[in-house]
Image 1 (spheres, helix red, strand yellow):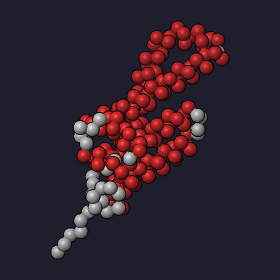
Image 2 (cartoon, one colour; image 1 turned 180 degrees about the vertical axis):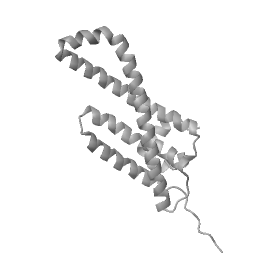
Image 3 (tube, rainbow, N blue to C red; image 1 turned 90 degrees about the vertical axis):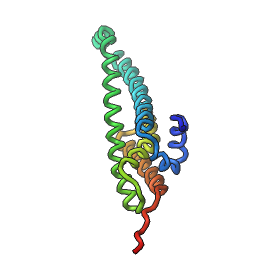
Image 4 (cartoon, rainbow, N blue to C red; image 1 turned 30 degrees about the vertical axis):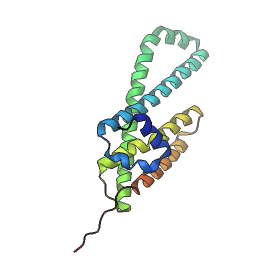
Length: 171
């Protein structure tokens, strides 16, 4: 049985294996996606915590207010970050899976949307990690989005070429 660590390593360094993982159970793929969501949420929460401390230093009244309600502010911020990260990652996977399905048709490969969704859930690992890195080094969001889209589509193209070909009908 394949572990999440093996899936993570293969999604980063062996894009040829992504097509083989289309046969994984949906439960295993969803677990992997939620691990990515947890990573994004943790880094976003750390960024939120450091951002609040920098902001509160500048405004004395805000510093007192945040210290009074921090027991309420931090859990709700964490919950909101978790929800937005979940929605955004699932939407990205869904959009890229639709693009991947088009790639399958272009390359005359056999596969369904559900297979491409699973492949995309793994192919999005690089762009997810890069988006975390870009947020820490203050890269503009449009540049980061374009780079992440290019990387994900390249990985999907490589994976699509590993799907089985559609056999021509013989008469």
